Length: 190
Image 1 (cartoon, helix red, strand yellow):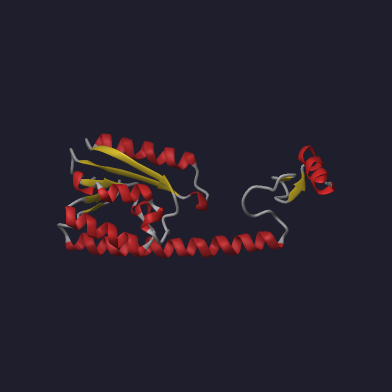
Image 2 (tube, rainbow, N blue to C red):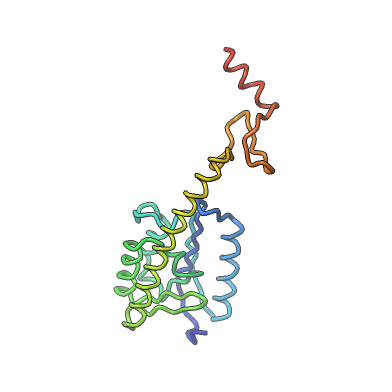
């Protein structure tokens, strides 16, 4: 696809548990990217984290911070897609600035962003980053509306069920869980 081979880079893997992703998604991304890198004779060091890509503070992204601190060691950042790096415009621009400064490409299975060497790549990166940021906001709005609607129906919509309850998978409602409910009743009695 990209004709570039033999690069040493940083493989960045990120999933967002708040968006319903899980360890299987992370494993799938890890396997996909390892295969992609093997096919192109890329070698890499792995940085992975479970955190929202829309986080507004870089401090909330310790592995990304570490990668950026070590960026001078690499020729590229490998990622499943650009939105895995960030869905936040400010952080996307920090990544862009650092990649330009260190002449580091961003390589995904479908795209190469040569930010230091190509004005067209910089524009495409900016447009793609903007789209990722807008998509993040749209997903957040849809999720909120969905949770509110489910709550109106009396369904349990967030987090673990409290001790003494369980979430019925058929009705999606909380129901008393008798093996624990006795302890709850005892505590209230005390």
